[in-house]
Image (cartoon, rainbow, N blue to C red):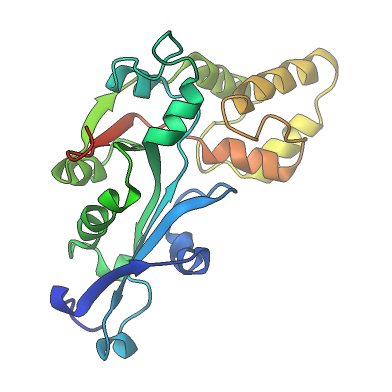
Length: 242
């Protein structure tokens, strides 16, 4: 494999097709819906022939509608009030969500993730960039890029969902196969079925455009894609707009 030489790399706009090349290296599928920006790192000419394309990719999306951690991190400026009568409109106008950041494993520890963040966050032209992530080494990387980190416990609706999965005799983690969860729910009857479906309804209501998902393997896959609950909320404030 060719050695990474920073001067031979460039950050350029990318497509969903580019993302799909590296998607298998992320533990969760990318939720359906439009992206506000996708960028990749690739080798410049003439080195592109000896390097994979892309080497790394980053995806920005519209922000998640309601996040308790955001309220804490922003001192409640996006809560409904006289100064903010339409909080969702204000959130969409001022925030972008860093939804995915993936580096080809063959090129880890070359600073590609940091390079991609630093060269794309200001391109979003909004005051705030946020992301949520499990507690791991990436938090240090985000902090070095100027993100503030906020730790928050899992909300009640999340704890209720994981408790309901345990009551099915299953362990609520990313190793649980969607088809197993789906079949276990499908085989329920009466009050047990009503109980789990109510918990799922409350859980899905927290995610935009997901509350109407019907019982299917895709629904189970979506639920499991949100487990484990991200323990860290990270926020970047654009120094030119904040």
